[in-house]
Length: 519
Image 1 (tube, rainbow, N blue to C red):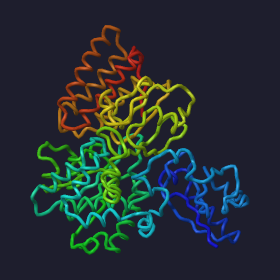
Image 2 (spheres, rainbow, N blue to C red; image 1 turned 180 degrees about the vertical axis):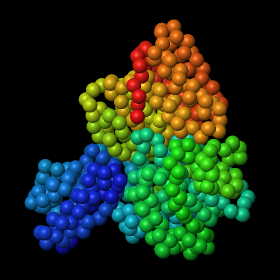
Image 3 (cartoon, helix red, strand yellow; image 1 turned 45 degrees about the horizontal axis):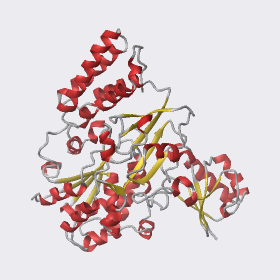
Image 4 (cartoon, helix red, strand yellow; image 1 turned 120 degrees about the vertical axis):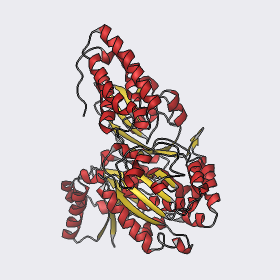
């Protein structure tokens, strides 16, 4: 009787040796005449345990990890195909505390299904949301998304339903749906995990969006450094089209939706929606003036619904289970769940999907296991390279949009990067300004010139006298306010956040020593 063994094809798992492990299992099974079927699944998001190998048993999946090729013969000796005991045995996968405490809605199938199998996707609830969407009007779909309280998960947190309604109400002979898959924030990987581990959920979400706003064409603008995601998406799109879920008549409805993947140019600024649209049109990625909004005049001057991967991937469960089901998760104006990416100086880096409302401390201690170095935590950056640095005294802040705004921070894309007490926060502040100077599209003066002058002022602060430092700090704070108020987009408008938070909470690090370069 064949035994199914799961070995991740996720890029991070591959970087840790998953491909060699899969080949070793196949070779050892052949040598021992064992009937083994290897399925390449997505990652469960427990990266300290990758490569994580799972065996399908009558009692569910049994996990082993982290497995290396040299461990494979001993696993067979221990009868791991029948959940035998071994030093790498982790027990039933679903009983692992890291997974057991999560509330996975968007990531419900990631790590469970074969990402290239449409049959597997449908067997686990896939395309039920689209089926429901096709039974109702476009206005009803938009109202359901509005009622669910879904906000953009790319960083801006703008209500998705309002954006879709604007696009729906805009008269045009052609409309588009665009997915921002140019995931470029430090410490983030949830978009990649979805695309590599459950690409059909993104395709289904974009198809529902197209029907909701009246679009017939869609584009996934994919980060150029994500070749594994590209292959997974192309394979899934081909399967969906062959089965009638994409094409001239989606599920025989008479409504067309054609989808393409376009590789990004490798610029951080193209994560900003209007720069992305410029790039997608074949132009230099520069920010557009707003208004008009993309929902009214977007790609090729046509109404465009543009959201990020996790936003679109959250839509199918809303249309499947209903707005109330999704809205019942979360707190205040932050409804549903947020896939949080734990990175940096942590013992257990990985993905955690929870309802809004859990605290940073719970995430870092209970899920992350504290710092990998064992030293005291000093700072946490939430929301990518433009996010504020949160001191240890604010770790009890709930993970919701309004609570973070109240302390001068932002949730952004849900990336959480941890630093211990050896970090030089003046160096981190300088890096934020330098990053902005390098990645600026150059269109507006506050961002283009302000970031360059900001680096110079920080360098003077770190080498000057106490009197000079005091003068330069006033100048730096004034410059930051100019960038916040005058920049065209969030790159220049938010680059001051990490600088100001470092000045406010870690002022002692600016007390006059040469800054160490951060790379």
